[in-house]
Image (tube, rainbow, N blue to C red; front, side, top):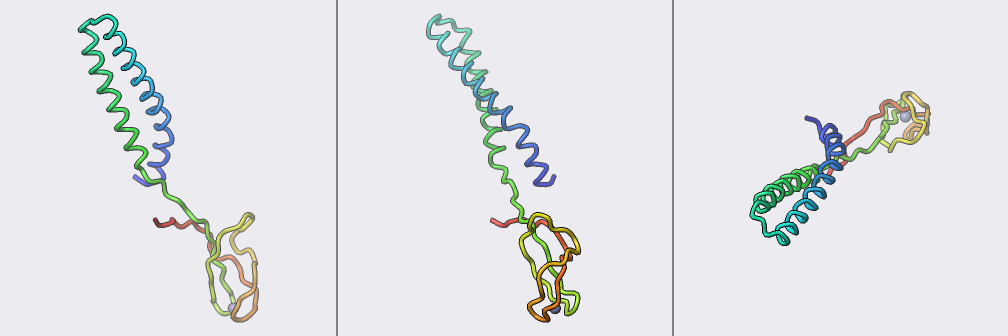
Length: 123
Ligand SMILES: [Zn+2]
């Protein structure tokens, strides 16, 4: 599975797990209060179940939070058609393939964009 796919899953499931966690904590607290007021032994089992559920949801939430989301830099490669000199620059708005941009530092002829891509930021 790709990192981008994981990121998509993370975005989808995070709010759901978060809401579930809050609900299960509220339910657990409510059950605890009910147990304190009524002293009904039946609540103990429900408290245990909802506590387990809270832990399960919390565990999943932590797992989702630990997924590192990849960051990308969008770059362009400028190539000189005369001498073959090339350099990498950050991509700017309105850049497209074969766009003429800048001049070659070696032979002073005009350079063009020969590639556009994204590269993963390390760290
Ligand atoms: Zn050149």
